Amino acid sequence: MEAGSLLHSPIPWNPKLSLRRRIRSTFPRFFYFRAFSSSSSSSSSSDSQGGYRGPKPRRDWVADWVSNNDDVVRSLPICVGGASLLAVLLNRTVSGIAPVADASSSQSRADLLTLGLAVTNILTGLVWLSIRPKSVSVVSPQGVECRRIYSHLPDSVVSELTWVWQSLSEVTCCRSLIVVYDSHCVLQIGFAAGYSIDDGEPVAVDADKLMQGSLCQGVIKSGAQSYLANLSLYPGKSELPFLPSNTQAVLLQPLGEKGIAIIGGDTIRGFTTSDQAWITLIGEKLDATLAKNVRNTPLVVQDQL
Amino acid sequence: MSKALSFNPLIPLKMHVIHPQFPAKKTTAKPFSISARLQNQQQQLNLSVLRFTLGIPGLDESYLPRWIGYGFGSLLVLNHFVGSDSATATPAQLRTEVLGLSLAAFSIFIPYIGKFLKGASPADQATIPEGTEQIFVMSQNISDTQKEDLAWATYILLRNTNTIATLISVQGELCARGYWNIPEKVSKANLLDWFERQIERIGLKDLKDTLYFPQSSDSVLWEMLPKGTRSLLVQPVLQVPKPGANQVEKIEGFVLLASSMSYAYGDKDKAWIGALANKFGGKSLCMDL
Image 1 (cartoon, chains in turn red, green):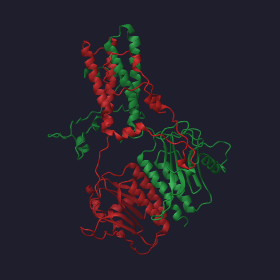
Image 2 (cartoon, each protein chain N blue to C red):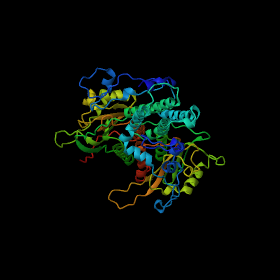
Image 3 (cartoon, rainbow over the protein chains, first blue to last red):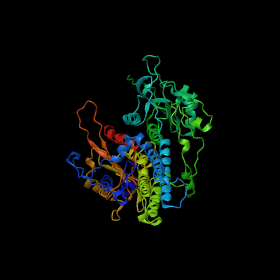
Image 4 (cartoon, each protein chain N blue to C red):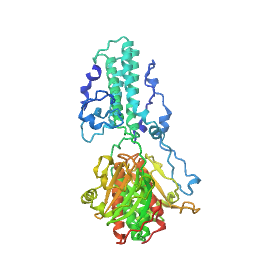
């Protein structure tokens, strides 16, 4: 169970307490936390679910609030810790006790414990600030939209490829997808570089040349995914002329030993580890599907600009 | 801060303070190799060098403020009652104690909030609850491609998300995989029927919206889920209507995922699971091959 449900004492959001209160009276029951920690009194199914009879989840206010106010929450422990530090010193000065570090009187001991808590908060705040993810901007790919599918594919394979493209473009930062299998370009979809500066034909994929290139050879030999997180740093970029010139990140997924999937994204380091894991397994499935179905006939484009 | 350091020997903090760099926008940039590597083009404040760790393997340090809060809070209370007579407690001491106790309460609450921040990684891995057995059953009268799809989908869900048990139902065909609590009276042959009955009871087949229960609470834990389930995600599988046609979205089935961690499914996970559900949604257009 989460600690939120075990919490009995309130958290006064303004820690700068300078009130003279007896300790007992500083623990009013804040019903916000009680209401939160009680088990969900979920409503029974309503008619809008049309037959679903189970419980419905309630909105998680704390999670939503924290996600929306990320910066504020991150600096909260530091502010709280720093303010308490100052408050303790102020308290000592104001009450006329000399600021000496000894554990002789109970006042000093209480002060030291409070200081320890303040320092813990400050350090936690520093850790939170350090794990803030960097915000990287999205770079729109410069190129033309294209949609080329190898013509002699059965419908099930076409729908599977379409599904892969839809998932990748919706869930990740993928903007271009090329699938090459058995020396054929099976799929080229999304943004591609144009032949001329203005809208031209999308550059075609030379499947043989691509497969002979060192980039793909390396990936297929090792059998592992290769993630070029910042494409501008890699000289191998010249082997991928069909991608828009300002593609930021590229993921190369081998499909067994005969194929490769090239996924271009519009953000530096845009593919998370979760994305990579999913794409690895999707690649295995594509390999199994394509191995059964790709036949040896020339490519006929199904072009839609 | 001599005071802060004077009692530190209680906790041997290994401060890996190498080269603190405040702020990044310095005109005289010091050539620290670490800071040069961590510098990014946007010149953000680089605080990652100030992270500290106790260095004990297996200890989850994000919960450290909570334990310190409990420990120091109880010491404060002890100090108040035992360290001196209550009658001689000065107002100054009371103020300090109130401040200390509220700080302790705040510290206890901190790991809970910290979980929702962007960039926070989940602390524990999914553990397999006891008393469960691993099963993998599938409806029999479906095509081989569909069997392959279901097997692959359940495999990818168990592998890539924090799931311990998954159940997929598409057009009446079921596939269950993972660690489930099966009651003893149900034999292996009747497993699918048992799942069917549970689903009928709750009416999952008519689910239209995604359900996500990130924390366990008793009313939610349905009997069929494994005992240690803490979060539950049910994603309906909707048939994608053909563009241009005036079709209402038909409910094809659902994908159910149970995990032994709370808050197991983040936004990214939910997006991927939704994409996987779409795979089964468009399936009816081209099924057998």
